[in-house]
Length: 119
Image (tube, rainbow, N blue to C red; front, side, top):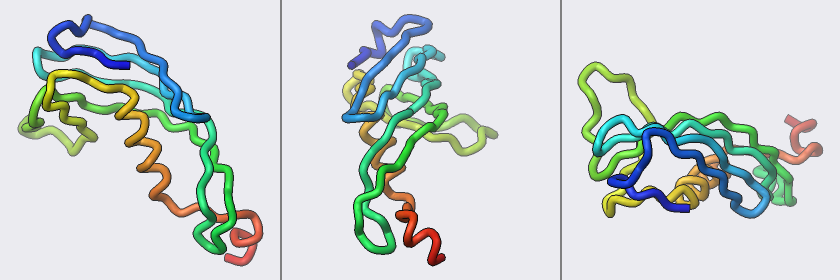
């Protein structure tokens, strides 16, 4: 699912799935080059146990608030650090954002029940 920055409505809803993970929410246009994404990433994905390598099913239920920038994000003075995605072609690709967020989750450590009990 893609949204063009110059055609973005003041509020736009989205709902995509990547394998067994659903990503849904809303994009709010803040300016000609900035938008805010509020959404939920939920479902399950496979991960190799970081202790023994066995396959583990990980449940995801993440609330996300992201800044979407049409071009390089320069931030706002005095603003706290935020999660920002830069789209250099003027197109917001929600599927790409979902895949990236799933990969971030995959970077965490997960253990099967046996390894978790040994820790």
